[in-house]
Image (cartoon, rainbow, N blue to C red; front, side, top):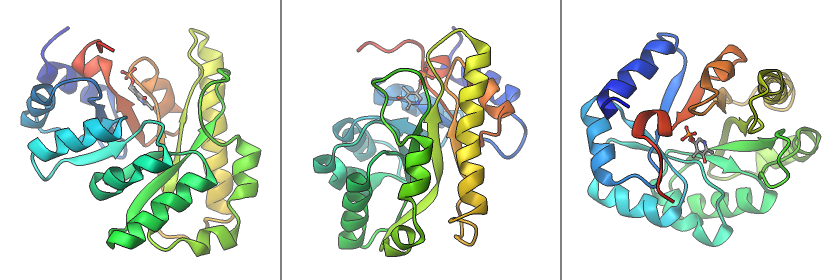
Length: 224
Ligand SMILES: *Cc1c(COP(=O)(O)O)cnc(C)c1O
């Protein structure tokens, strides 16, 4: 692997010049790795644990946009709502309400994405497509006080089968399109499709992703 700056440059070169945001997934990597990416111009970083996000945000520059991408328990929303610019992983009504209440309580509006489950793995979190379309009624959308629904997030199956990966991304994009032309048609700022990771982000962009979450291809392997 090259340096973090080289990796970032190479990945950016494979993305369209505009219209796709690169989130550098820094989970499990030290603050020094984030600082190196920051020095190379990167400003959006993804974290998957509330405590880790909090610790890193305290020591790193204020103009970083933190993305929360991991499974979030309702008892951990407080630090995440206080820090994150975007929460990608809203996977239940209960979590959406908890985020909305906390954001209203501290007076900090927050953008969220609804996580869609299409991958074949049973353990992945998220709404199934039909479930999400049923869940997101106009009343539900109108009831939000401080959480703003900015789009959807999803993952493809963890497989080498490129047809399956393409089909998964297409299914996620389709849910976004259905919501965009339906319940979210007049909702300002419903425009993010977050999909694609180190091994499949190019396929995701081909299928209409406009936000990719790339970790190991930038920072190297993670030590869990
Ligand atoms: C860890 C993670 C990523 C980044 O994965 P890489 O394979 O390292 O690029 C992206 N999205 C989510 C939701 C993750 O948990």
